[in-house]
Amino acid sequence: MSADHVRLAAPSAWVARFAALVPAGGRVLDLACGGGRHARLFAERGCTVLAVDRDAEAIAALRGVAGIEAVEMDLEREAWPLAGRVFDAVVVTNYLHRTHFEAMLGCVRPGGVLIYETFMMGNERFGKPSSLAFLLVPGELLQRVAGRFAVVAFEQGETDVPRPAMVQRLCALRLPAPQLPRLP
View (cartoon, rainbow, N blue to C red):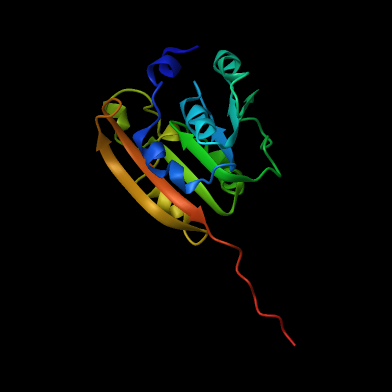
């Protein structure tokens, strides 16, 4: 298991803050789950969790944990590997792959929760990630959910927890599809 997975054993305070929005028994996708800190949090809250990551060692450490289905998965292959799957909540931390961002949003059921926290521009002065390919631009999460999600909370800027970084955080509820009136 990588050093990052071991170091980040405690759930993100952002994710923990909004975990109560997901009902017990809810189905949660922990995308790029790493060591599984959020998968464990939601499983302990009575949710069933699909935890996916490309790190075989991290996934192996989650196998057998009650409430968690741990699957080794390459999330960056050409075709979105979770097509057609829908969850009560999608949780993403410290991960960004724009190619499948829209498909990931589609995994949140109407009324479901998106909890997202990752690095943004300016993080390069603190270390990795430093490539713009892996850093959100200011307000990007807000732009990506506009019109389809109701924003519960949003933050962006410098943090010291768990280490100095520039981050962007969002918690949002997916809006139901608009109901058009029936024409006579």
